[in-house]
Image (cartoon, rainbow, N blue to C red):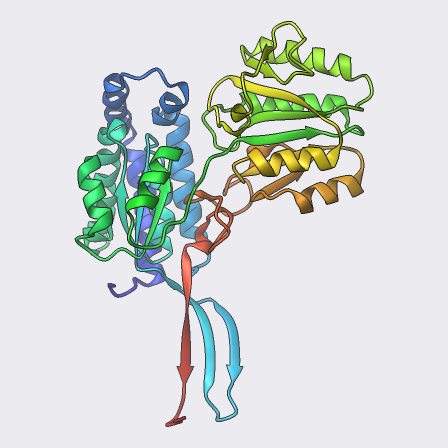
Length: 398
C-alpha cells in the first residue's frame, strides 16, 4: 500500500473538494440531467436515488466539511501493555489500504463514501452504476482537481468505468491490490459481489424493516411512526415495509382503520394477513414469502401478532437484520424486545428512518452493514479502519 497521507493533507483535500463542489454545482446538475434523461426504467426508488438537486449538493458539501473537521481515525490507541521483558506493546488503528466501493444509482455516494474512505487513509476504487455514469465522472473530476491542487496523486481516488463482465473479472482477478470491498445496493448486486470477490466483503444488506405495535402502545405515536417510516423516503433502506399489530391492542379496530385511511392518503398499497385482509382496501397476501421482501415502493404489509414473543420470532425469521421498532409505553417490554430482535439497529418509540450514519452521530456513512463482522449498522469514519500492533524494544529475543 502507499504511504499514508498525514491528517493535514487529507483534510486539505476534503476542504478543497467542498469548495469545488460548491463552485461547480451547475456542472454536476447538468451531468445528472443527462443521466436522468438516459434512465429508461420506471423504478421510483432508483429514480429518487439517481436524482441530484440543490439540496443533495448542500448535503454533499456539508458532509465534506464535517469530515474535514472530524478527528483522525488513524493511529488511535486501543490497547497498551508493558511486557515483562520491557517491550512496550501498543495496538492502534490503521487504514485498510485500498477499498473498493460498488454502488448503484447514487451520485452522492461518490462524495460521501469516497470522502469517508479517504479521510480514513485509504485509496478508493469507485465502481458506480451505468445509470449514474455522467454524474459520477463529473464528481470524480472534481476529486482529481482537489488532489492535484494539494500535490497528491490522483490514483488515491479512481473511478472504474467497467461493465458487468469487466467488474466480474476484476473481482475474481484484481489488477491491483484490494483490501476490502463494500457493495452498496440491492440483493442482486450484493450476491454478485459475494460470489466473485476474492477479498473480504462488508455486506450492506436489504432493509425489510418491521414495526411492532405492542398492546400498550400510544396509538397516535404508533401511527406517526409507521407513516414516517413508510412514506418519508421510499428509496431508503431504513424505510418500513412490515407492521405487526398486537392482537390485544385496545381499540385495535379503530387503530387499524385509521392506519389504513392514512396510508391510502399517501397512495400506499396495503397488503394484509388473514386477520387484517378483511378490511376494505387491504389485499390478502398470496403467500408468506412476501414477509421477506424489501419493497422500496409505496407498498406495505400489515399483520397481527399474538404477543411480543410471536412478533420477535417473526421479525427474526423474515427481516433483513437492518432495523426494527417497538411502540410501547412499557419500558420492560421494550428492553426485552430490543435485546431479542436480531437487527443492527433496534428502536423504542422512534422511527427506523434514523438508521443513518449522520443521524446516529457518525457524520455520514460508507454503508449500513447487516453483517456482524467487522462492523454492524452504519459504517462511519471510525469503522473504516483495521488495527495494527506496534512493539518497541531494545534487543529483546524470545
